[in-house]
Length: 495
Image 1 (cartoon, one colour):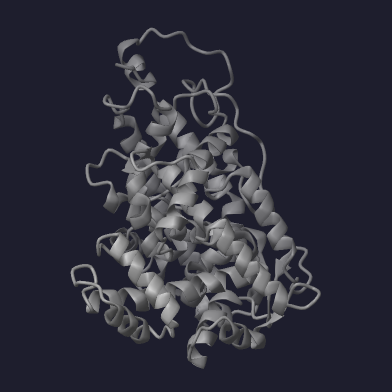
Image 2 (image 1 turned 180 degrees about the vertical axis):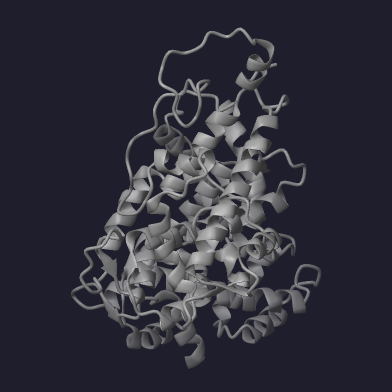
């Protein structure tokens, strides 16, 4: 069994004493220095983040970050309610946040139901002390899993074991990148000091890789600026630009979660006209990413019936369906084939999430489907490869779809989230996916209502089913469908 550093220290009280200067992590810390880097203005470095776990003093920059987050939730009296405290702490990247504990500690700061900024500073200091004591106590008692798989990365397993109680979902790629920032690239992360270092690096990176932080910086700089700001927050963007910047980073398939994130904050942004700095932009990006990862992880865990951390290749169709992709056999087989996956493949969460990302990139279509859709788009779009959204109805009618006007506009709003009035090829393919999902839902209901999986198939039955599904199939297609059903001995797939 692997022996952690904590266990070795318990068994060896005569360990040699290091001559290096004692830092905030203590004399026993033998870890390499973390990268002295920060993603942008007000974003803390790893060393800055370690202060929360080793010192009682609240650094000046922490107060500045509080001054960014607090006003967004404050009322006209510049106060926040106790009910809003968990949200504020979550945005300030606390890991052990519960409404009950927030309420308990808030009572120590004030007897009133609302907290002004001075009360909130006192509350922050008390909660940081609680989290520091709790984390250090947990991690000192922590031991590596003795049943960890020998063929896996021990550091990765140790970090995931630590992060699981915090409901934080991360991919292996993200964890490994953050390890490098923390100076833990070649370390097993098998003791409290290393794990606290990782938590500090996670907070410094807001849960992103360095490459993702660079993309977020680029997305932020593409947003329109607000008033000129020379303060420590750096450049400010208009609050109305938040969704546009996050959409630029997250892509069209983050729209549902982005809409929920924006709706939850609509009151705060409507009432507060001041702009958004990069630090606040990054906090919102982290929350959006966690919403996406948690959704996929939830469906993954429900399919992992034996709880060994793996699903099978044959489970991918069920994984993708609640995520907006009712993949037909041809689509599923081509997509799995491109990723080298077969039905018996054992897939970790990382592999399953990678497949979901690939499906989104392809909009769930085969190459032939995509080519056909883009050919149609080119036929209707202008020379700049942009199509006015008003022309979408004409395009759908030309394709033979019969939609109510309100249904079409609802789908357009899901695609044209930035409301620029035009649609490019990427947005058009997303629209085609939405259209296909609507039609597949109708076909599935007709299939189940007419019990086509158990009923003897006749030409008249097929024709009536097509009509019920609003498909005006000519006799030739009905004949071909009937012959196909007979050749398969009447076993029609509901897919």
